[in-house]
Amino acid sequence: MCDTAMRSFLNLILELHPYKLISRETSRWAWISPTKGSTSVTSAKIQVNGVHLHYQQTGQGDHAVLLLPGMLGCGQTDFGPQLKSLNKQLFTIIAWDPRGYGRSIPPPRDFPPDFFERDAKDAVDLMQALTFKKFSMLGWSDGGITALIAAAKYPSLIHKLVVWGANSSVTKEDIKLYNAIRDVSKWSEKVRKPMEEMYGHEYFARTCEAWVDGISQFAEKSGSNICEHLLPYIVCPTLIIHGGKDPLVPQFHPEYLHKNIQGARLLVIPEGKHNLHLRFAEEFNTEVEKFLAEA
Figure (cartoon, one colour):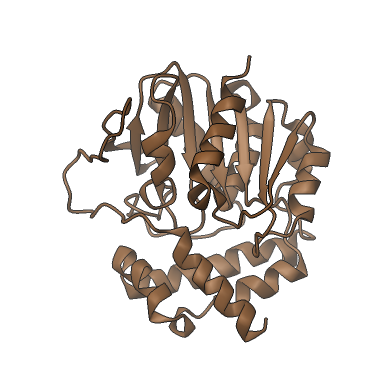
């Protein structure tokens, strides 16, 4: 990867996490400043599959929606505009921290061959533990992959699915991009500092390197396949959103999802990048609300 592309990628990482993580030392309850029609956001943990998973919850609508974050992300860092502004009367919104991320530590994050399937089961079992019998999912990046797997493996539980910045395979082009960020000591301080404040340098560096190895194993051992084989089993209404200027996920990835998920829709936001739900939050929220509210 050339220096210019590398700088663009690292600058994007800083953009991905503009919302400060609530300290692990804070109380059980959290608050996001309300706007008209909004409610407080509660923060709690619940034991699921032997792990204490942290989640945030807001809204009082009948339609439950789970937000699934990306690599090294959590509900608070990755979904600030959605927790704040999605319609609280129509939806009950839950944003979770996957095991090893955010405030779902311990355990430390690891990446066995089935880590996406493990996350999918954790996510579904979390919602069941919270007594949501059926729910929709909004999955970003790695969270989008997790959501695809969950929708395919637990179809009776999933109402609707929205994914963006997600891929069902890992190509050689993807591997080059991943390896470019393996060594966090080469990141600029501006980009590195927010992650170190969240996790501490050692955990951040170790987890980033482990993630590169974890995601790369699909190209090395599975013929590039992450969840391509599961796409035909997704039967819920599905909206795929793609940023036309996403430097991390080439357009052939969302096009493949669109082609191989029955009845899926593809929405391209021409100026959107990988973090389109943050940079174009109002447009994103409007499209998602419209899709989720359809009969």
